[in-house]
Length: 119
Length: 91
Image (cartoon, rainbow over all chains, first blue to last red; front, side):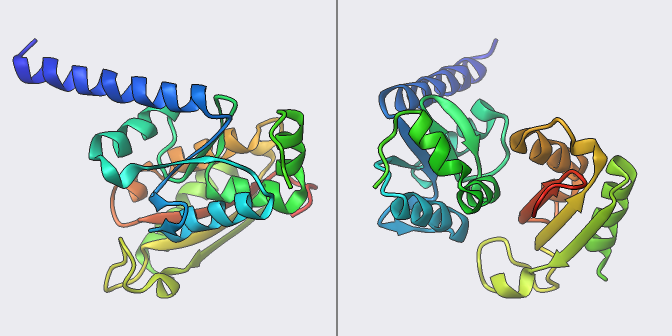
């Protein structure tokens, strides 16, 4: 392997480690564009609004801070778009899925079952 | 209908034999946003109903639709909103 390939692998491993740590340490994590107080994409903003509406505490991770993270989260979940919501380490879905689950009441049920407090 | 919308429609029809298929070009509403293009056809809303989705969860359904449209997503399409249902399911 060339040095550049080795370095890229080290970056990928570090990013995967960061993602794994984020979802292990926080019950609810949203990988998003921008931060919860200032989303920089309409789809991310929608999911933030839903989580706020349900009174869920969550950790927001801004993928725009790092191109490697932005690509890494897509590889991690095998999901091509952002935002991405994780609950207790499990990938739940992106904006469409979260919106549908919110509208049908399933999201609140899932969060309750997973022991995540909602208001 | 634009060329991209036609291509989306053709690929979804071939992959899922849908019982209902709506392809709406939503680009105008995203004018000036990231990924918007002068000719439109960058943002789409899809509603697809197909027996292929029975027994699949939401994540699996979206993955299947996105896989069928990989070429469009790698090219002109910046964002897709997808509602994928099996026949008989509530909207």
